[in-house]
Length: 270
Image 1 (cartoon, one colour):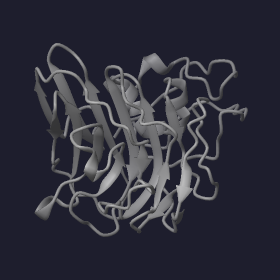
Image 2 (cartoon, one colour):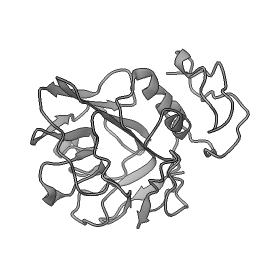
Image 3 (cartoon, one colour):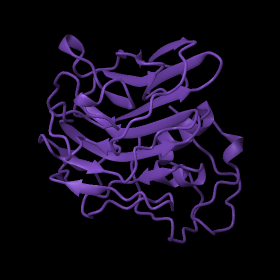
């Protein structure tokens, strides 16, 4: 349940730039096959677009497998990163958050959803809208390099800043939690469907260009389960991860849209 991205025009293209009206959160579960400068995991802009939109991707030089999160605010890219975690063949959970407030905050999280890997803040101004539709991997309409080289097994976008508890829920439960938490886009990236289905219910299905199903399915911090919003799942939600934290706010987490609540759902954190 993942796709391999390795070419200049290999990507998953959505139908909207997903420009935020305020705060937002993006999530991805991914790895890197071959590091390179300024690889874009997620973006809604191309090189000729100027200072607009946002990019979640790698840095350059010795940090070409370390993540950074850039958001265009007030006419400049406000950058959190590069982080300290070096991505390789093992899957990692990457999260970028922009908090729109009197003092703006841009945060990057890698694996640890409680503590920022990198952050920047200031009185920046207004987010600068992008015109390109959001792309995962590389925008197939703009073959300008900076493509992702690795696997991507999950993507979600929220139009608000998620709390630490919510970030951990998405980290460990992936698409299961993303829909319940009101994701605007929730792509499990199944790898064998085109377009890739959006489980959020908002219809932002991803048009696939060039990518193939990954030989290395999404594993590690989050192991996806065969599930869809229309499915009826009877069991309680309990991910197979070491114990540590119970998040009571997910005591009513539903296993599927329309199903009755599953009380006492427990989320473990390493």
